[in-house]
Image (cartoon, rainbow, N blue to C red; front, top):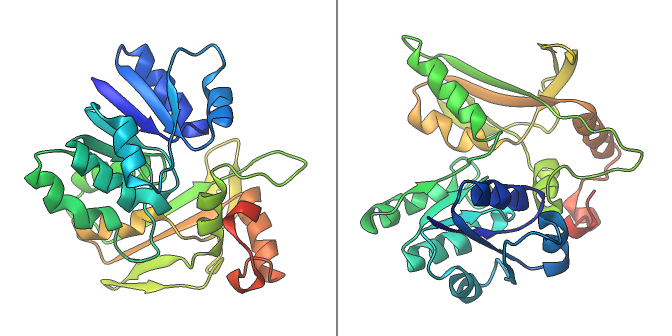
Length: 264
């Protein structure tokens, strides 16, 4: 299979290397060739081309001939990359949803009929959270007679003397500045950021820690496919605690001029 990976950062570069090891033909596109080559490794035989993920023609030109287009760039570019996949008549895979325009529905779902018409498959939110979390909820639902409530609890922790983003600046910025979505009594609504704290016990070595409501993509898909009355997602760990402190000090307000490239 011929696979084009758009975005050769920490996630995309690793995915490209795993694909190459399985014998597939793979090449990458990224707006920063020097950084992409560092992630791939200077001795890596995987080709990488300069591509702006917001430029439809540039994506189509670089990905021409691929069977699968992997979208490993920030979710703000999803619509452009989806259009590119359709124009290329390629299958599509991405990692996350940009819940700004449609806060309670994964925007990719609006493209379903267009991919069906082209007889192509689009797999969305194929990461860990969302992704693995969705599969765990689906599997649990299959083992039960019915589902009343879904509570997703995540732990995120990093050890560093300086603030760092575990994801791209854009993804971390969206997570930090977006209001959490909850699904209660069959209805979607927004909740207050870092609200509804609870103490949740994770398996060792993490143990019991506080978790807070967070903006997670699972809310944009799961309640639409699995009947349920309630769903929320909470995160704990030193990363969320740091963001919570910044929020309490007013440092996470877009009105203060906070932009993705300056975050964290």
